[in-house]
Length: 288
Image (tube, rainbow, N blue to C red; front, side, top):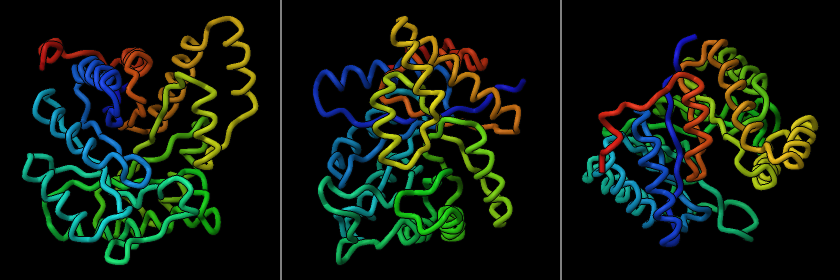
């Protein structure tokens, strides 16, 4: 079976301890030669400066291409585009363009009066600069705000028409979820890359809570499996086996690229990659 091309998502650290964990994670995963790594924004744009610092540090020191997350939240058009130009000046030419989550307790997304109304407008403006590879988000299951099951497919098509180069999906727990979404996108005439986003489950309770918030279906069998694994102290073994099996099925269905949500914890992601035949490039192990 062919080895997939991989990419990794990190989030910016908010403490000294978190900084050490992030850099340990980047250093452990960089030798796997990812296509790119991405760095997230916090809800409401709360980590904007931290994201910029993390992006620049990874870009300057770890020998991997970095995609910076950029959102529409709580910023004017000029402020948002200035951030993008700052990335370009720092040698970062890949952006994950998102609407973004509103601040906690905001009661939903409200565009800035002088800002981008949505991710389509953001993608259009970034595409007009001609300086970036643009990736966008995709929901293989209905977004909590979606009007119907096809709304996310139609909206993804609008983002591609606005200039996006590829999409990365929200995580999911069963392979068929992604395959059904990919088929629906193909029927709508979408022919650009849709990369499945996969999360190695380091903490089932934490991932389960996040899944409920983003509309990901939680299979009953997965609850049962982790309940038994926790009793036996086999959570990591189960998580690695499940994630590897899912990736194997995706590859068998023609998937060539897989994006891992690492949660800044490298070991499960590394173990899954190794199981898939994605192994370190020794020449990169001592980078940084």
